[in-house]
Length: 134
Image 1 (cartoon, one colour):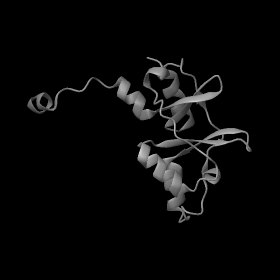
Image 2 (tube, rainbow, N blue to C red):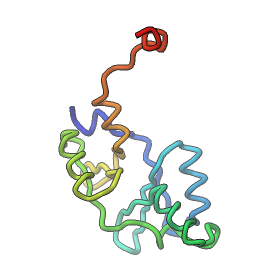
Image 3 (tube, one colour):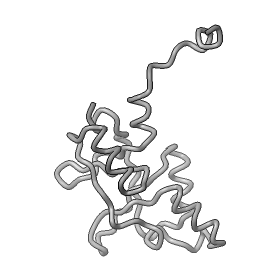
């Protein structure tokens, strides 16, 4: 199975000046764990994850003052839609992260997460009643 088959095509894109609270609200509303940060002044794409926000809050930083640019990972590993899920999982394991931005012709077309990969690799769910009777 390929990354294009598993990725979410709903890419939340924010700017570097979004506060962490604004980013968190948008991520929560879209039910996503990461946002692509588009910073043309800094030279491209980065990623802000729920963990980045959590780390900031854990450090007692003000989410209304902290901006995405301060907490964005800019040393990003990108995936191609044609990668296998094994290649994506290897990249995530090697890099120690849970999301990959998927690029096609240098444009973000999706995000693939560990959850997306697990969903594809997990056995099909049985009906709840059948599982309870087993």
